[in-house]
Amino acid sequence: MYLEWKRLQRTGLRRLQEARIPLYERTELHRGYASHVVPGLFQTPAYAAALLSSISRFHGTPNDAEEAVDARMARARVLHEGTHRFALLVEESVLRYQVGNSEAMAGQLGHLLSIMSLPSVSLGIIPFTTRERSMWTLETFDIFDDRRVHVELLTAQVTLTAPGEVGMYVKAWADLKELAAYGPDARVLVTAALDAVR
Image 1 (tube, rainbow, N blue to C red):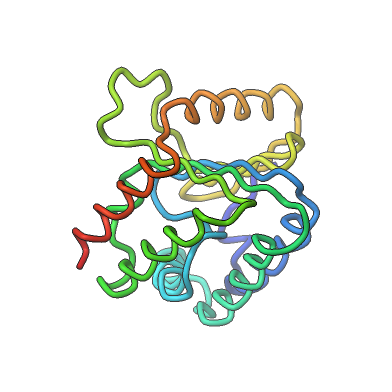
Image 2: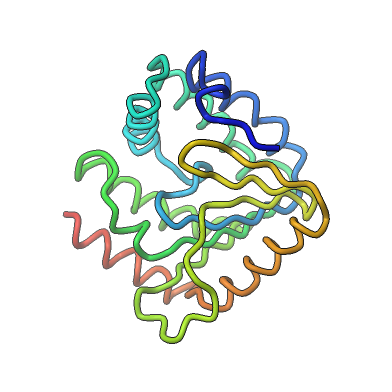
C-alpha cells in the first residue's frame, strides 16, 4: 500500500506517531535499516523535535512537533518492555548528518551509546570504510516479524505484506548486516562521531 505523507500527516504528526504504537507493541522481532537519520525508536526528544519540525515544515503540515515527539517517546517504551527484540542497522553517515544543533546531536550520539547496551537491542553500523560493498545503500525500511515492511520515501510510506516483497527486504537486510560493525567496533564509530560534534 502506497500512502502519501501529505495524506498521513494532514492533521499533523502526532496522530501518525500514535497510530504506530500498537504495531510496535505486537512486533516481537523488529529489524530495520536507516541511511539518513537515526531510527525513531532510538531518537532523543531534542533530535526528534528537530527532525519532526523539519518534516512538518517541508511537507507543509500542521506543526505539532512537540506532541509528536511525546508520542514517539511513548512508542520507544517497547525497548524496555516485554520480550521484543530490535536489530537495527545504520550507515555511518547517519552518525555524521547533523540534525538539530550540536548539543542535540551530541545528546543523540550519547544516547545511542547507552541504547547499544540494552539486552534487547542489536545496533550495527555500516562503516564508510567498508570495501567492495555487496549491497548498495537503500531507502530506510523496517521489517516487522517477517510479515510487514515499511519503506520510507520522500513523498510516501510504502507498506509491503506480499511474502515475496517482504522476503526481498529480509534478504537485503541480511546482506547489509554482514557489512556492519558491532559491539566495541560500533562504539568506536559512535564515539568518533561524538568527538567530531563537540
